[in-house]
Image (cartoon, rainbow, N blue to C red; front, side):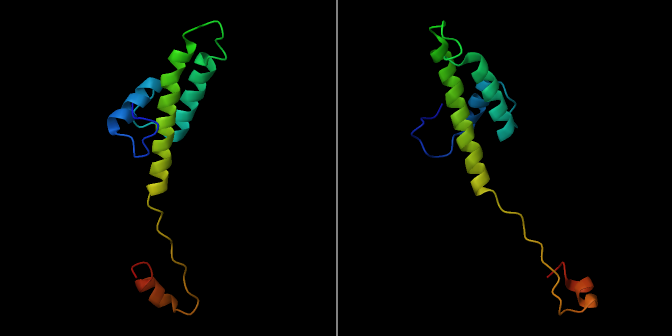
Length: 105
């Protein structure tokens, strides 16, 4: 997976690999990613499995995958185009004009 120091967008290959690590489909949204991470964290976190010496090594890829997907979804949300603003009907226009041209202007 991509370096944590790499501030650019993760590659598609890294994103798909991270989704596989968390057991998610390719079209998983941010809420699904978070829910899958929390479920795995409750099961595999080293603080929960204190008697397992390999718990930290097994949990590390899960945490890295979550961080990569969290950055990806944050970047997608930041670069998403805002919804077009709906124009209000001005009070000084005749209703006939608004009916004919209002939504097209």
